[in-house]
Length: 190
Image (tube, rainbow, N blue to C red; front, side, top):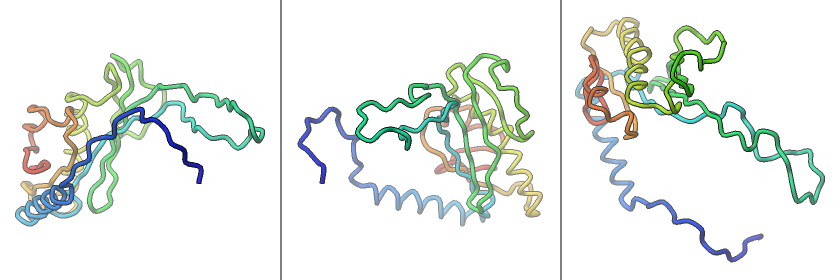
């Protein structure tokens, strides 16, 4: 089958032995919050960020002579990235993304007419930080929550819930205390 005995080169990530119980507890807490505050699917928002290669390159080609020992691919060693923050509601609504470029001023942004509701910004490393996440909440999440309240004719104090991971940019006290935003389970939007 093509397998051979090889010496290990790195340790496997720690496997959580009680993952099913942790998952069940998390889902139960989310379900209880949704029921307690009567939160519609449009107000349940999940977000995360990912690195996106500026020069996309795969590591496969279909145009190389059979039996070649070296296969060169342009851009394979290019490590330049931006960070994209994507969010969606449980109703299937995709919210505008945030794109973070590496730099200290707007001059690092590409000259391109992005959709007006996208949040195009920068950080020194291009990775999300607490300031860029607060900006995303102000420019994308809160306007979505307010527009959804209006569209669904919900009361002005209708809560929503935000579900996100424990990445350090998400755990800042300032972020969790933002207007319209307080922490319960994942995070409950006022």
